[in-house]
Image (tube, rainbow, N blue to C red; front, side, top):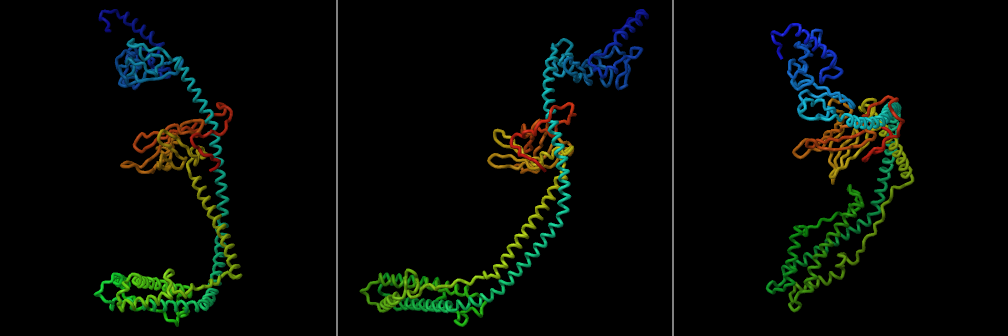
Length: 550
């Protein structure tokens, strides 16, 4: 409102003094107690914008007109909309909202006292006492969890530091011991090689003697089997010639079906044999003992026996052709070739056992057992070898065990278990979460999986947080690749809890899983004065495995 030009000067001065008097003692609406000192006019009733860009009458503060570029002159209206409006929220806790939300017709929950809606468009009741009571209950609940979690985290820290200290001591002891173990393994191997060499030399020397004795033992059997093979070849040749004579000399004008069938089968047999029936090579009887061959006497005897059985099976086939014809041919037809073949068949069957397909007078040879190398000297050397092998196995196993343990300790000492080694307690502990379709699991610093009818690999521990040092987040990456998508991965978010428990699993993006978990490992470490009595180790839920050491 502009002052009339004729208004007395004294009245103007008096009005200005009254404005200053009215505003000096009060804090403008929307200003927090912490900022109250910034909203005091100078002696002339002027006030400077907080960004220093402009000086305005203090009466222009909260006049619903934006004078300052930074909007600091309108903390209690929405004229600028860039500042913050403070709600005292007596009975709860003070809070600030953007000034653009002042008098917007919405009861903002941050202002439980309703002071942000003072223009009368809407009535926002003061519910700060109720909100404050609920907030206090929630604070007490969270505080109780933090107190229990703090006690447990201190135990985790104590365990982690103690465990790493013990690991360093163990590593020092093992490294001092490994040279001795390596030397013991080398000595044991040298001793084993020595006794093995002695045993091999002894067996090699006695082997020649046994082979000579074995050859002498088998010579009569080799000679007998050679005779049997020759007899079989002769018999086969005889039957082949008999069938050949039948084929060539029988009366072809008389169509005896039995004779014709026999001749046809004979032709097929000859065709399957090729030229083998014309020449049957036999080993010379001069080398039957194997003395001029690298083949052992046992192998020579086996070869002769197998060859004899082959030829005798062929004899059986030829004999069956003649015997079949004998049974079926027309006896009223006196064909000389057929009668000759029948006579040969009758004579041959006197010596031939068609069921066994062997000659009746030939019984299986009684082959003596081969002489054993289990001499007293050999047994003694074998016992020494067994003992040396057992000593070497034990020394080598102990060396490997210690080397593996050294590698395992070095790996664990290099691992980042968070501040004060808190997460050492959780190393390799595993947890599960089941929903309606899948079971999700992971092991701290290990693998994460999804299981239903089969198991899908979701990732392996790869680090902490986005920046590597945020100890409330872990990443498990490099999981099985999704069809037409990325490799699966898991982000593990940790919040304070009095036990270790996965609380939820979701999939915010394709094949990117979010595990949320409560654990004492991220609870704040409270001073002793703020904690209750110590509690026992938390009971881990959903499949946690017991874990007593690194």
